[in-house]
Length: 165
Image (tube, rainbow, N blue to C red; front, top):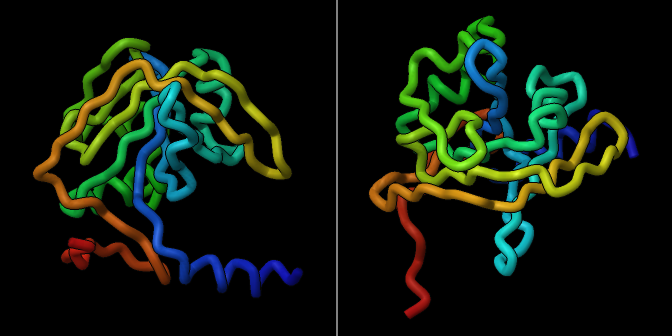
């Protein structure tokens, strides 16, 4: 498989845009991801694929916890900030938004569509990434928020779903 062709095909996939965060105080780190999903409902578990070169990678392993924060359509600037498109790094990325904490003490974005506070259950190294598997110990859900999506190198929003009724 040619890498460039694979990347080109992946750009067509529509993904939700999220921030995975960990750490405390000046040790907080986070990154924008599209590779985070639910794993199972009973017990509630999620997974996030984190590049081992990302600032947050080792913090997640060290703290044994992370949050998965699904961004809303009005949070494009936050997605760009945590993707380092504005040049920011480290804990400074957290300053423009309203962050709190739940059970584990890691940063949780209060105005996200939904956030999952997770204890690291397991981690699996695969090539350049680590699959972080989290047991959900807390969550928030803002039902009035519309999710931010990403495809073909652009951010967007879901306008509606066809009803299956």
